[in-house]
Every structure is written in C-alpha cells, then in structure tokens.
Length: 211
Image 1 (cartoon, one colour):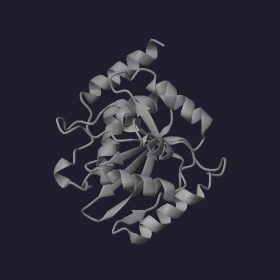
Image 2: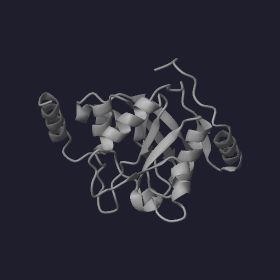
Image 3: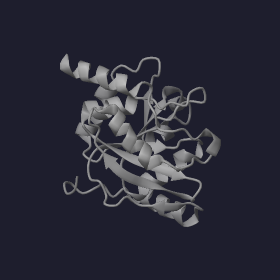
Image 4: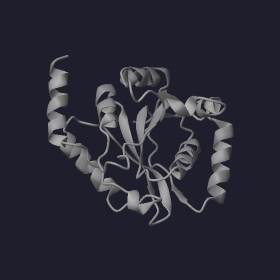
C-alpha cells in the first residue's frame, strides 16, 4: 500500500533513533519500499530483552507510531506511565477476550498503526503462537516481517504480507523469509511454525462460515 496520509513526524523519537543507530554496532536495513498502512509488525527471532530496544529504534527511525502488546504487570507501579509512553498496550493473558476488538479500534483510529507482536514460543515450547495470524485475518491488515540476525549483525523491516487463510502456505512464506536468521541468543531461535497449521486453517474457515 502506498500513498495516503503522511506519517506523523515524531521528532523526539526520530532523533533518539538516529542517535541510537549512530552508536549501535547493529546495521539497520530500512524497509523498501516503505509500507504506508496499518499493520502487525512481527519481531523475530525474539530471544532477548535487547530485542525491545532494537524494535523501538527501528520503528522510531521509520516514524511509525508503534504499539506493542505486553503483560499487564509491566504497566503497574512507577514505570507504568513510561510503558504507556513507549506505546505499550496492557494485555491480561488470563482473559484475552476483546483483544481483536481493541486492535480493530486502534487501526480505525490511526491509519499508520504498527502493532508489534512477538509470536515466538516460550522457553517451554518451540512453536509460534497463532494469535498474530488470527488478528491479521480478522482485521485484514498486513503483517510486516521485522527481523534481527546476529550472524550478520543486521536488523530491520522486511516485506509486508497479507494472510490468506491458507495457513500452511502463508507460514511457508514466513519460514522462507526467516530461514537462516539467528537471534541475539542463538540457542533460543525457533522456526516459525504453528501447532497443527492444516487444522488451524480448517477451524478458521469454519469460524468464518458461521459468521
């Protein structure tokens, strides 16, 4: 998607990002061509808390009004306001109902919304979480493949995809992009794979038929 409203300038954040990339040992690979529309922004391989700093620096360099999903505990206490200023959206992991509706509203309110998700599995699982796929299919917004590769010392934004409902085929495209990319902690890098991708495709198709 190209054209449309101009991105917000976000001068303070852009200046902080410029300083970061001047000092950082990482090489930033900017998005080409820039995608101009609401999106989910995948951060992968997500293997370290340092990925959060890279994600902010990438997004602020691109002047994206980035938002990210975080457990609600992060927004409690004295640093809660900072988390909100950084674009955080508190999520109750025990009660995820309504999350899609919240993201739909964010997209309606901001034509440049970039909502970061980290679908990599937890330490107890090597599978990716399917929430990003469900949200993308429900909202129709693009999925931008953000990445970090410690093997080459590079990081940035890759292509933006549209999820089709053919889960295995869409995930094959995602796997092809991330193939060979290694996280900051290489031993925690996981392959982009959802549990029962063929079964998920069938369930999503049935859910859409029932609406």
